[in-house]
Image (cartoon, rainbow, N blue to C red; front, top):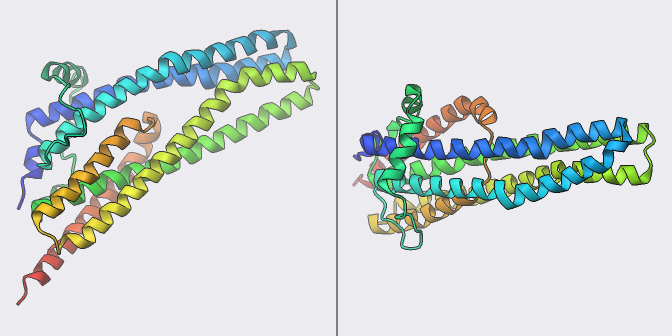
Length: 304
């Protein structure tokens, strides 16, 4: 009933997906550097300063320096790559799901040459390309395009939201444990107030990074929950709409998905890969269930 399974595996679309993945991978390398200067080094310097108080002024200075470096350079590099990856994925979705390009979203500044550069970098490992085949469940081929499109869009929202909720929870737990541990050590070592303040300054990049990531991930998950609710409302009413009305709603939903991809913080690969297989299985089963529901409702609507 639609060509989504075939369109998503065309060479040009695999190039787009691979380029998008490569850009995210590049952004995550900056994120690792971000973690080093915001978590690993500040925590180690704080531990050292607690045991050796003369180190405290230097660790405090480095804490301030790392915070400035993060905000002025690293965060901007991550943002640029994330936005470019979102634009490439929007090109993929518009073609595969047969959506018109939104006049409100500037995505035409992505060149073919740029996509190919990132594609070739990603495809150096042959299995990378195989992993992105069948991006959307092939079961959607059994329902009309307007319904299949909604199922694919809803899958994007659910998958990302579930990941981010668990990721933000893990970050929050990590932040509380390390902060309490360092506070306990400081009290146990009977630090002077001045040194305690200096050590607090040295650990500030860690605290600020954890708070920002926690809030950003929670906010992103909340946005996605709202999108899931919106897509659910469209789904319920779609069987009583004509194709043009469903397309208009899908385009509105896609605008929000694009904004989310452009703004949302990254998730570390080791966490993503750990949860990926289980969540993908649930996502595919959900798609199968929605396809079955759609076929049943379409059948009822065609009964005399």
